[in-house]
Length: 138
Image (tube, rainbow, N blue to C red):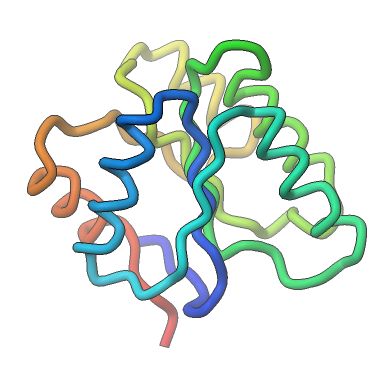
């Protein structure tokens, strides 16, 4: 179970607009109470997270990354996050991928992901997975 800070953003990074919408719906139906920031590219994630890391403010509560994005991949975003001193403790989950390839799991964990979870088909199964793996810190 990954505990996340309430009130801070959950950042979702996925280059598929439909997957972003589904993930937003799933997070709203889960027991998590955090606001959600939706970013449609790895470059967008760096543009959003970079200034946050530079000013040393509170990091997001959680970052969920699609590993298989065009351009800047989820692995690239994960490398960027882990290079930021302010984000060393930030929970990052490579969750938004249809891949369950062992090599993707291994690469994600080696780069500092806290977990790797394959996408679930169906909103109810996805909500169940989120509720089973994440909880707001009390």
